[in-house]
Image 1 (cartoon, rainbow over the protein chains, first blue to last red):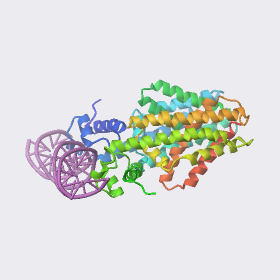
Image 2: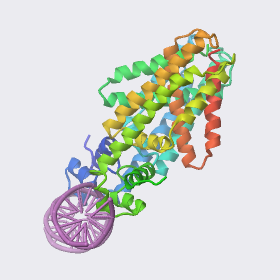
Image 3: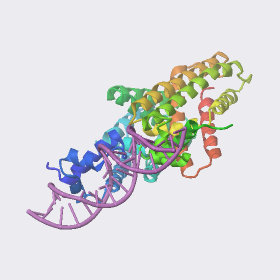
Image 4: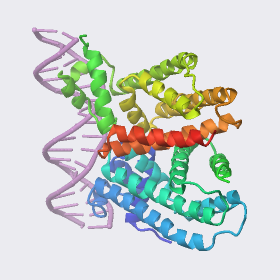
Length: 200
Length: 200
DNA sequence: GTCTATAACTCGATAGAC
DNA sequence: GTCTATCGAGTTATAGAC
């Protein structure tokens, strides 16, 4: 599958922004990675900000895609009496639906969230809020199925999301220091397990 | 108390870095805030990186100070049979021991942690690790005093720290969008309460 | 320790030939 | 849609007068 120049620019920008930050990356850096001259970039994007905006748009759409695929997920929820097994199956399914660029883009957005209001808005409304709603929904299903005990599902969901976010940041940092993705996933599963166990 | 130029540069840099990021702040910006010319900055710091390094050093020392003051804290732990009350007293005492610049510097460091390995190292070793150790210690005291039930205190401490970190990030973002600090503190106390309640 | 002046360089962006 | 050439502004940092 041949990729056009615009896609190549997009991918190079994602790679560089995630490694050196938005302000630390120059249009020159991007053009060099793509193999064209700086000025040629402007035939595809109106400027540096426009590239960043298209990256944000990609991430928002990826998230909306995941969210809607969760209705499908809900339909194919595993038939098990073990809440941990039930939950882990859901987590793994979710992780697998993420397009490949979602991970580095997350890092770009976290990097920019204190500086760029669009990134901040994404984190608060799409990222955090969607995860809370999703988690709450599934917890409610689990309460209904009596897989976990009665509780304030909203507050439990919020706590779960906070915990996962804190852990994700630590895992991202550890992976940059050489930790394997397997180890990160293992850590995630361990703490998720403990959390769900506590809800039995 | 008269402040010398070096301190003024330091404070201006903290303010600007936290608002516009390290790369988004120029030496010109800093000199303008201090009220001296650019070139005069170099009589106090060898360059922009040197300013950043002194900010990191300040934060590391602030954290070491808090950590040692926790031995004092442990000595003056409240005599109460309510674990939530016991814990909240500790949290509030800790919050109050933080020097004033710790908060904006945290934002600078979180901003740079994916780009600057020194920041990354600080977050992993000083910030996360110290909080885990501290929380574990206090949970153990609470188990010994039978304020909370027996459990794997290390893992509970790690989960607690992850949750607080996730919440802190959301609170920082919400405060940038206009949420009051009181509301953030209230949110923190609410979720901490739920967490500790769950350990009874 | 501050200043003026400037070196040496990088930045994002544009004009116009091919 | 790519290129060469260039602009104007902004960047860190240094030299040397006061």
